[in-house]
Structure formats: structure tokens, C-alpha cells
Length: 466
Image (cartoon, rainbow, N blue to C red):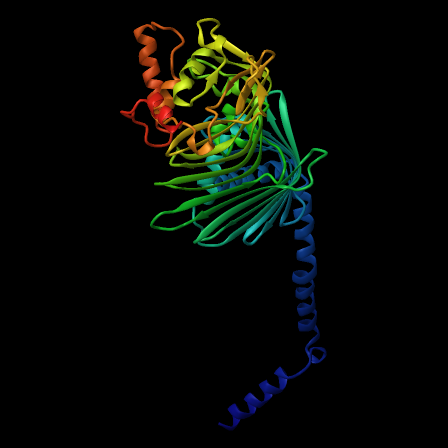
């Protein structure tokens, strides 16, 4: 027992000795080990990593890795030419191309991409990004399904900054500067906020696009909020969020706000703004008779629920003249109470040309009413005419009913359909009649209810309101 006790005391004394009192060989071995693991080995590994990062093999290897990672996160086919690691978290990508996974069409091409990886996201800086407007609409729906509709158990917060963004649409392009996109996702809510400054001399505020996805188990929904902030949004760009905007014409632009809430069962769109350079030729191209001319819609307000027009109002103006089918005007006498010049009521030319056109409209469940917006002018017989809608070199062409706005005749959706889809020929062939009926049914799904014919005669109703 005494020997064990003395040995334990000797061991404790040796453990408490300082390093300089250790044996010479043990001290050298410990120092060499510390130098190898703390200085030499990290330096060698760092030099090897730097040399490997500068080789073409590393650039292609990193490009393959980032192609897979970005394709998995975005749901799009991505091609990366080369990726050079500047540090374990920072990568310089020379060129990147996005393709639609189904059509394989190129959506965008990015140049000079600097990517910084964090624990819960990444930061991407792009010198320039070129987007193709024709493929942007499909890509937006795909990104919505891939980025926003998938709830993330771990929160993700990523940011993309683009110095120069070009949206190419055929021979036209729209440029934006200082584009910033923030993407946040979680288990309850995901959001994308896009801010961009149009490259124009009048642009002072950024266009803001905010998309929020609520991961409600009972009814998940997406909210859209587009604010132009007095900037012109080209129809090609707007069609990426609202496909019907492509029917406004290539030169058309929208200024205002658009709000929407979309779920699997319901969708509600609210529009408040104005449309400039609207092409009525393009807008009425699918109708048997076309309205020709270019103009604008001011104070444009509309509510669309489940692709069904609930309410619309605004002031319609055609600049630089246009034409309208005479048959439309003859039919509009009864359903809208229009007053035509005497020469237009007789048989003659199929088109009526005008130099000025201005009217306001109001369309809801009660029907569609047209109201003249031009100042009063003297008619051919020196009689005062108020509520003028259109005029030419000979004076007023046609005007409204000349009564108070609340007494103006309103045409229900069925009457509007019959008016819009009327065939120009008096005796059309059966195939044209069948096509007219199919067109009326197709348009009727989007017009305000009721869309059924009324038993009362429109002209009688109009006379009663006088």
C-alpha cells in the first residue's frame, strides 16, 4: 500500500511539471507536431486549394455542381460555362443561361455572375441579364410553382442584384437598372419582392412587384401586387403576369396598380390605372367586325373574379382618327340609344370614319352604358348636340342619348355579345353562323351576369326612360 501511494505522488508531480522541464526528446516531438498540424498542413492545403481552383478542371467541376444546385432550386434548366472559386463561399461565374425545362427555349442569359453562399441562402450579383419576353410568361408560372409553392422547413433568404436588365421582345426591348430581387421562404409564407428602375429620363421611382404565397393547408393562395409608380409597363412585360395584356398591342403600355389574389378555387384581379397606345385593331382582331385606330383608356378600373368581368369603367379615346363598322352603329341606336347623323342610317359604306372619338363607359351587373365625352357642338341643322362621342370634318358623327347619365340605356351582356359578334353579311353561310355562336359562347364566359336575353324590347325600354 505504501508503494502504490508513493508512485501516485510521483505521477502527480510529473504531470504538474512545465514544458521546459519535460525530457528533451518529448519536447521536440510535441513542438514538431504542433508546427505540422497548426502551420505546415493548413498552408499546404490552402496552396493546393488555390492551385486547384485556378485550373480548368476545377472551373468545369464547379460549373457542373452549380448547374445541378441552381436547377434543383429554380426548377429550370441551367447551363454554366465556368465557375471559379475565389474563396470557399464566393464563386465567379462567367456565363449562365436559363432554359425552360419543357420547351428548352432560352429564357435568359446572364454575364458576370458573382455568387456568395450563406448558411440560409445566397447572394447573387449580375452585371447584365438579358430576358426573352416570349418565354418569360411561362417561366414566371414555373418559378411560382417551384419557388413559392413549396414550403421550406428551414427558412431561406436569398437576394439577387442586377446592374443592367434587358427585356427583349422581337425588335423591341425595355431596359431596367439597379434591379433588386429578394426571395424569402418558410413553412408558413414565402415571398418575392422585385424592385427595378426603368431606364428612361422620366423614371424617378422603381417599379415594385410583390408576390406572396401563403401555405395554408385548407386553401393555399398567392397575392400579387404590381405598382408601376408612374412608370410605363410595356405590354410584353405585363403579359408575364397577366397573359391577356398581349392583346393590347405591341406598343401598348400600362401605368397604374394591379392587385390579385389567386387560389385553386378563386381568383380576383383589381386594376386601377390607364392604358396608353392601345391598338384597337389588335384588341378586336378576333371579332367579325373590327374597330380601327389607336388610343388610350384613362381612369381605367376593373374587377375580374374567376376570369369573369364584374365591373369596368373608364374613358376611351381614339387619337388620330379611326373607323367603325356602320352595322355596329345602326344596332347601337337601340341598345345604347346612340344618335347617328342622317347619312349613316341609310345604306352605304360598311365603315364609318371619324377624326375624333371620346366616350366614357360603365359596365357592371346592370349592363353597359356609353356616355359622350366631347364638348357640345352644333349639328348640320344648327341644333345643339350634347354628349358627342365621335366627330369628323362634317360635324358630329354620333352622340349618346342626350339624357342624364342615370337614365342612359344599358345593354346587358347578351345584347353586347350580339352586337360584338354580328356578322357583316346579311345572309351569312351556315359555317359563319356556327363560328359566330362559338365566339359568343366563348366571350360570354367572361362578361358580367346576366348574360341571358331579356323579354323586354330594348327600344321600348329606352323610350320609357325618356
